[in-house]
Image (tube, rainbow, N blue to C red):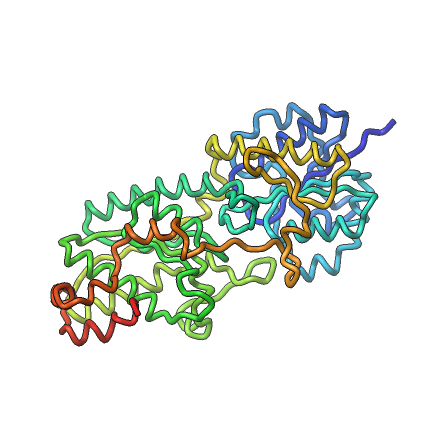
Length: 414
């Protein structure tokens, strides 16, 4: 008899630990007598159809040692929704041609959306399970569990920021560092807190409203001034790329060439937040005779395909194993999560936003103790800084009168 086929496909951006899921899933399936086919190049390969679909049969020897490596041996891709709608029938035909009985998808909200769509259209003929991944940590998972890849990305992000903080101290300069986090500031906040950065800015601070370039630059400038008043001429500010999504696009387009990814979304990671705010802040400070060196840097791509730390290695082996066990026990239409020490499936319906059809986003709760702790250790203008005993020193440091300082910065703490 022909062996039943398990296909594995990866979608979205890279995240440390993908190979751990592939490895554990493939080994468990092969040990249970299944044939494992890796779809090379993500859904793009399935949309190509027929002989154009890049497929690789996986053996235990192929995957037994990949769980400690970064990247994805099956590569990955992003695909516009228009392509998915246009070529969905080709995708289904490709899966049938490959005799796929079980499908394991690894990815973020877009990949989960595709997994749910495939499961609905093939109910009873194809069993589907999804393993959630993103370094942004913005997927809603039970028990507030982090998505795999996040902890590794934070770890290496902290190492980079620590080195830059030491460089800033040694050379007497500031760094404005942008980090990934399209919808949420978890990664920026995690890096900033752990590294002890003087300032971290995330999009959730601004709620639902559009924020001006001037307001964000005033927050950064206020932090520099406050540090100068403390005899500190250096520092690091960590900026979540999602702040770009809060800015007025008309205002932003006057300063930056807006690019879009394969899915048609604005490439927030391509917007040089640090460079934009460096120019604005530097010009403002120099207009009052304050000269400081500001260097902008973006970190993100350095983190996505990094070798996973032990936490994510163990985590992804659990998820890969759990996903296959769920399928082989007759399950379908769910994500595998690790909740309170146990692997369990959570149905797509339970985790899906009924309005968008995608997995619900998890934003940073700015009213939480987690954010409160991070905020308490930042050096930025606070309400108490506008008391008579404090504002005089800050205004003098800024090269302004008390009235001028109050007019420019008081709205930040209103």
